[in-house]
View (cartoon, rainbow, N blue to C red):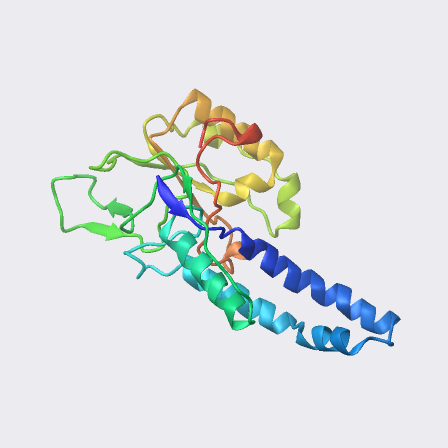
Length: 246
């Protein structure tokens, strides 16, 4: 059990700031006869401030100095740090605030997990491992044993695609996927596979037929290299139509 604050308010706060700028901007254009209070409110709406809030929240979620690792999901250290930050922001606006605790069933990562590539494939040698610094688990994903998993790395190649728009019509190479045995392997696959229902279905079928020991998602295409390291708050456990494969 982890204590969690109402950190979901961050979504509302950002949404209100962003949408509010459009709504109030429209009101100024259509109704110039604003009251003094309305003028004061519209003058305080700032897209720049909203973006700065977002950057600070990203910094909190990626701050590995928080007990070694940080999430922003409910019940996590990063989630509570986010709630505390929101509370301080509200108080700086002159609002009275209080934090209400409730029980939330989840796990928390107290130290940054490690993904190490063993160059010679021999677990008994310890001087040839390359640590992938950008590695991080998706929240709610099933945990590995305490001693970790040592297995061969396999990859499912994605088709050559030039941009984000064209991946929606892309098709995988059945012969290449058939030649890749994923059973008991640590499977590396591009996150872009989720952008195409055809690829996703083929991926799910492959996992059901040849269950891997673990899944590692990466960005496969250069045109996604701009994306910072991040993960979804609902990543691992079975959700809706995604089934149990994650």
